[in-house]
Length: 195
Picture 1 (tube, rainbow, N blue to C red):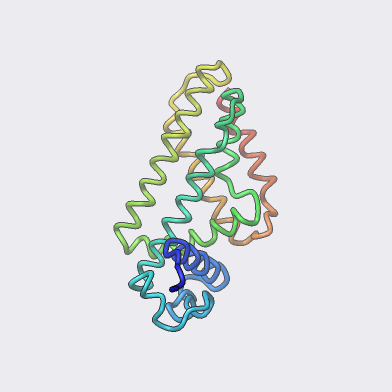
Picture 2: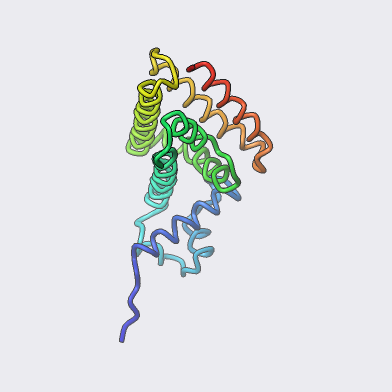
């Protein structure tokens, strides 16, 4: 009886290998040959799952954005006060452990590639727009609860997103999370300004 292969799982495994290679050696290190070798495939076998490096990179980019979105959307959705939900959401957008810092580092390596690939650039712009909408919704819920004051939340959301993206960049130099306490302080100051 022929062996049953879960092709979707194989694709996920290949993406994880690509993420690992990019994390260790940058975007250029993730060649079809290096990905195949690390994944335990013979040369050319990756083509059964991805037509080329570009499709692996696109899948890796999409996977990271999806993981980030899922983590952010889930944060603060438990049945808690809107103010606590807002804090949880803000904390989820700042890389706060080694795994999140690593995902951000891989994402940074892929940004340059996305600048030359309109489909991936559009995917990232969609991610940013969704992030902004969700943050504004949480600020409005905290306002409705009376935790923060009425104000124009759009510019505040833009500011916070820029700070969170900046934290991801800074973590390139601090992969062990040495700056996490600084970001926690920033969140405290940001929330204080909303009150």
